[in-house]
Image 1 (cartoon, chains in turn green, purple):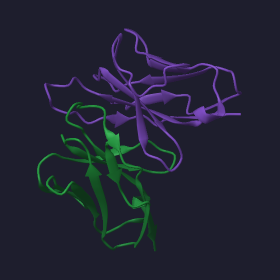
Image 2 (tube, one colour):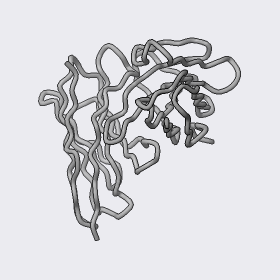
Image 3 (tube, rainbow over the protein chains, first blue to last red):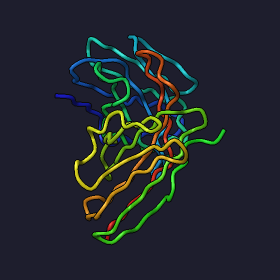
Image 4 (cartoon, rainbow over the protein chains, first blue to last red):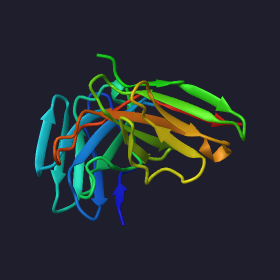
Amino acid sequence: GQNIDQPTEMTATEGAIVQINCTYQTSGFNGLFWYQQHAGEAPTFLSYNVLDGLEEKGRFSSFLSRSKGYSYLLLKELQMKDSASYLCAVIPPDSNYQLIWGAGTKLIIKP
Amino acid sequence: NAGVMQNPRHLVRRRGQEARLRCSPMKGHSHVYWYRQLPEEGLKFMVYLQKENIIDESGMPKERFSAEFPKEGPSILRIQQVVRGDSAAYFCASSPELAGLRTDTQYFGPGTRLTVL
C-alpha cells in the first residue's frame, strides 16, 4: 500500500530550529513535495526533492533519503507566522500528478 | 499574475441540494486538479482535468459527483443531492503544461468550504 507518516503536532519556540519528519512507504518514488498550509487557507509550495540530499531555501531546508524513504523539513529562526500545518506529498512512479499526501504536521510556535 | 481563483469561499447547502464549486486556474495553466480535505486529514485527490477532457477521475465518487473544464470558463465541481458527509474543504490546483515526465508544481486556490446542514 501507499502510506505517508508525519507527526500530528509539534511545538517550538520563536527563534529556534525545528525539524519535521516525513516517512513514506510507496510502491515507488518520483519525487517529494513539502507544502505549508495556514489554517483555513490553501497549501503553498515550499520545496521539491527528487535526488538525495539537502535543498536549502532561505530559512527553510528540505532533505531526502530515498533509500530510507525519509524526508525532513528544517525551519530555522522560527517566526510566529511559521505556525501552520506542513504537508508532505509523494509522487508515485505511475503518476506525475496524483500526489499521495500525508495528513500534515501542525506546528505551534510559542513566544 | 493572479493566482488560482475559487468561488464561493464558503457554501452552505441543505441535504439533497446541489453544490457547484468553481475554479479558475492561473493564467497559462491548462491542468486542473480537485482535492477534498476533511478536518485534521490530508488532501485526497479527486479528479484531474485538462481543457474539455477528464484525464483521471479515479479519486471521485462514482455517484453524485462530476467535474468539467470547458473550453471557455472555469472548471466546475458539481455535487448533486449533497449529504452531511460531503462537508469538507474542496481545493483546486493548477499546473502548466507537463513536459514529458517532469512533474510540475501544483498551485492551490484558497478552497471552498462546503457545509451541509
